[in-house]
Image 1: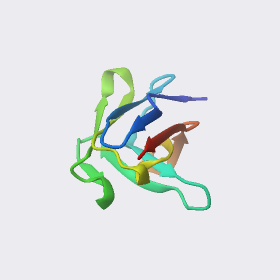
Image 2 (image 1 turned 90 degrees about the vertical axis):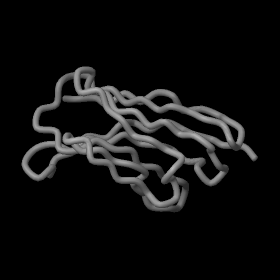
Image 3 (image 1 turned 45 degrees about the vertical axis):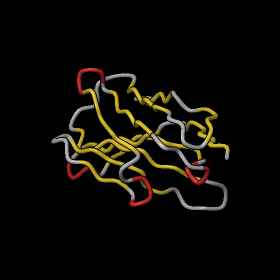
Length: 118
């Protein structure tokens, strides 16, 4: 069983930066995309950013220009650089990896808390 281990969350003041990392415990074959989602109490989990194996990226409108997703294939790791953080970015952030034909299978990380104070 593959585990996705997230790190880098924490408490930061508005305007600050954090970098999230997510490393897979072993190689995952046929990855189609890696991404970050976030969730706040009472709301659905939402996509923050995703990156395909080809390097194409997709961002939520609310984070465009502030967040950057990247990956290191050799380390089975995906990163999320978060700059100019806002209180509304406060959430639990989850790493996601899709794999297999058409990316129908997926793994999830355990989540890491990001709290932005005003």
